[in-house]
Length: 307
View 1 (tube, rainbow, N blue to C red):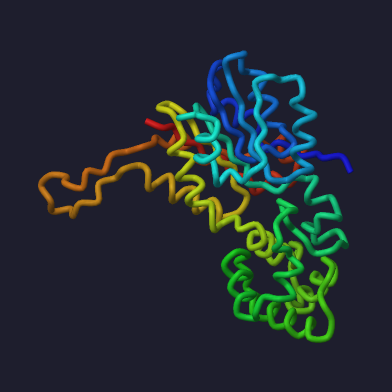
View 2 (cartoon, rainbow, N blue to C red):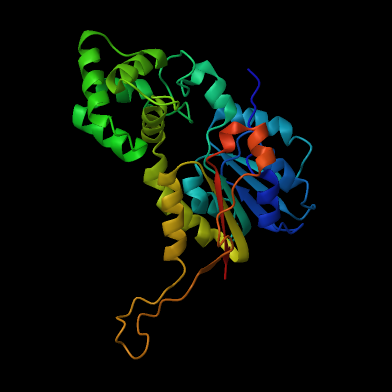
């Protein structure tokens, strides 16, 4: 299957990064290299693009797409390790970082990956297929209490208890192996539902758990801010309220707002702003993009600049 991934808000991201031809830029979620290709072609021989990716199939596709560029380094790793990666490359600071938190179309549409509730496949959902934790393991081995916790916290699923109860009941008789088996359990647990797919929240929750997405995000964003040179920019694309809230909160924490009691005559806390928020109002996909890629409808782009 051909690796393909629609680069969400491509033009907006490139514009917001304010790319310098001799700058150093990091694509923290390389994917099929849609964003990276546009960054790399704006760099001269003194510029550098570092693409970080944990999916071997994405790395293969990105390597082919970026083959003609000699100013690109592709690193198999998780972008949560950005400071360690830069240290290994003897790079003290970068001029821009892009983080697209979406799941690629290839991962969603490839039955082998087990991400989609619309395709019957073995439960997997690993972005890095070298990891041991799979969706199948979560569904079949997590306790009722842990299932309720992740469905409620990561999926904001109102039927978390009912779904978890029926998962535990079903697996007493037979191991849950496929996406459609899980979808069927979810449908029976919810009963009547609106036009949204009843399994959407559960699949999101399990995917987040398998890949540890939210557990690392706060520190990941903090380290990305730390990696920036003065004037460097960080662009983050989120796709659901949980991750967007984390990104927004971390940005706000770096604004350096005074935390002294209001009755103090002078500031003694010493808080100083580290960043400036460029996107006072979050950027959303254009109508044209929504018509071309319905999966971008929940995307939000937030941008900050290091000061």
